[in-house]
Image 1: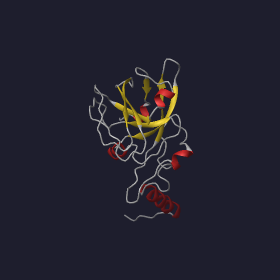
Image 2: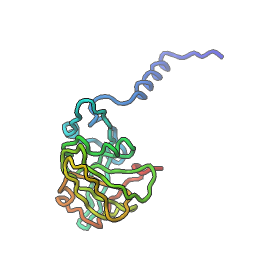
Image 3: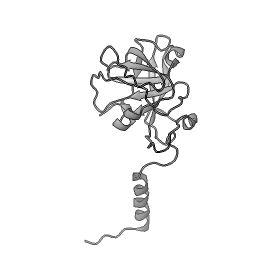
Image 4: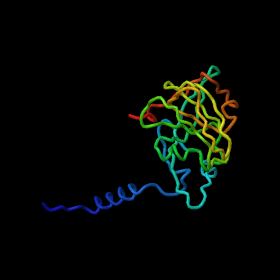
Length: 187
């Protein structure tokens, strides 16, 4: 069998090969978008400060809704949905734009009891431990550069982190629900 490829087919294959090699440019702006979010905030680019010899981990951007008594509020989120992304977390981020955080989602939706720490994180964080339906079960504070592992008192399914004090500033409280779109959840 003889294969004959047209010039346009070769160009298309070359473009696919370039895309398959992965993204390039600023890691804070090239993680892509997972629906329902429509755009990544430009200010993300200035908030990640990787030291020399530390490999980058790219996070996609999306949106969750927090259902509160005083009304729903949308939060932009960096999505930590792979082992590399979850283990890096907020390391080397000096902050996040207002109304944004990082959501931790695992490949299997099940109860978890493991803890989080703040190694290599230059800011204090507030952690919301979430039930299967997204209900906020508990809050924990992680202090900048602290290696102490903190765990909630009860099992959780997901975690939402924000710079310390943002949950309170936004009126987000225990019992509020973080509505996670199906596009972020494992199949």
